[in-house]
Length: 468
Image (cartoon, rainbow, N blue to C red; front, side, top):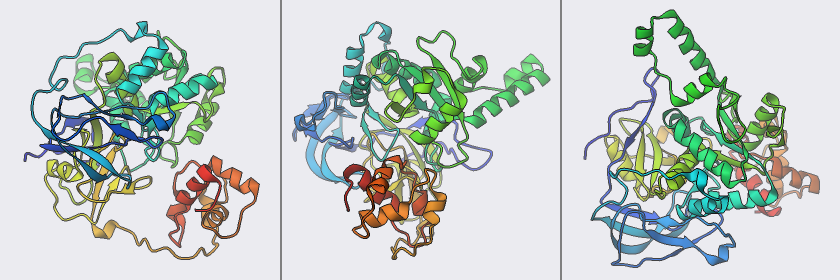
């Protein structure tokens, strides 16, 4: 096993790009990658599959017209349909494929289709056929095509694309936005067309504009030759500089860039982005933004670009790998079904056995059941942590300290909602309805001295309105 180039996240040498991960000899592809529906397996033991072949489709009982299909991430032979515990903790079936044969997309020259000539309905169908999942909220991954269909019916005409990570311990979308902004922008234009030419809001890290201004000052102070040698702007910074970060030149729809101070957590959730947009942009159609609009992330827009413009289904995933148990940290593009153990090997192997493998960030993430848990379409980061980084998780009774109320950015009463959800004192209708305002940031969990799962309890109320 050869280690990936060391891309550490220590100060002064931050992650600036992605590297291609190695191919695992056997991949395990879970049949479910979205919250709303389950998939029906189309292959069986002994079948030969090509890279990109459809191996599962959404169940007809899901009630969705545009559920995301599932594809073979590598060519090879289906060894078996095996039980699997996905990164989100769900027990389900998975397709085990042993790598063999030629690739259909990897290493091949890509052809580009004129997506502007496609009707909206065809674009939506292609997004579904390619298996694109919207990972704006990694705790609730859903078919992007289904979201587009539902939102179009409601007549919402604003698309929001977040160009940074909602979890402060994850850098996946932030790095992708700098490295592949043109692809992200094209993906956003494609989704906008599918939504009936919706206006587009790019929510970006406010520090990016400051970096761009500093670079312009440096270019002014140096000669043209020195500036060319010393300063290299990302495509996103170039867009911000060229168009004054508020409008995109020659865009097919109204577009604006909205700065967000991502140092203040939470900054990457719907309500917080809506507040930032309404503060920065007053005119229509951006003033019509609401939680019912489509909110997407950089990763999803890259997937749309690859699916509609290049004809490549979702068989790969960008994953940020880090933690004290591995000698190197970096952003890798790996095949769906690659195990956590194989990711660690590509970072130089485990220096010590991890006490926990955290998926999708320390604030919003979850524990992987084992090192053999596979990468799915909603996995953006993996952290291998030693025992001294794992906090005491024993829960104690609520002491009514009120800290959760103080820290809540939506000014809710998380303690009252928790007691209602856990079968304690029943809350009034007004309190129960207020759970819909919760963004799921998890700050209430982080300050609770009793270590209660407050955020998870409120999430259950949002769905059912009843006790756990």
